[in-house]
Image (cartoon, rainbow, N blue to C red; front, side):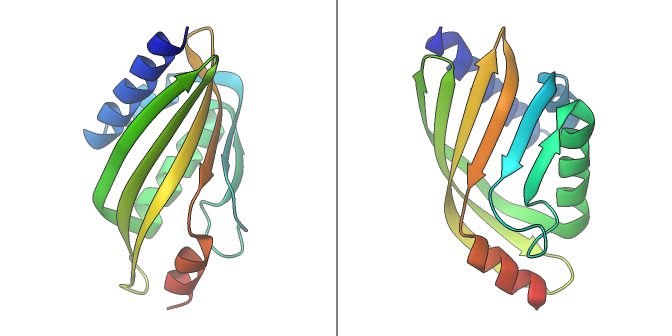
Length: 133
């Protein structure tokens, strides 16, 4: 049911906004794929992370590498087991002080009330440039 899936994803964004990463990690299936499309050599949070431990590592990496000044999911659309979210964020890369200001698309696959897959598409060139300093 896509309405329940959309509500789940909206609740996870709200938890992220409150800094409740454990809530997000708790909603991940044991075999989940969390994939930020891009090269890990350009940014350490790009690539694929597996299961709850991998998702925790992803969020730990984000906290180490960058700080958000804007994180704004704007549109939520559900279709079957998929939830599509368009949004905008502004991150500051800690080591360079440079910002990344871009739109993004997140795609969640929900199975039995948990996130079985996550895909993020963003402006990877901005992240790579900001990481280089």
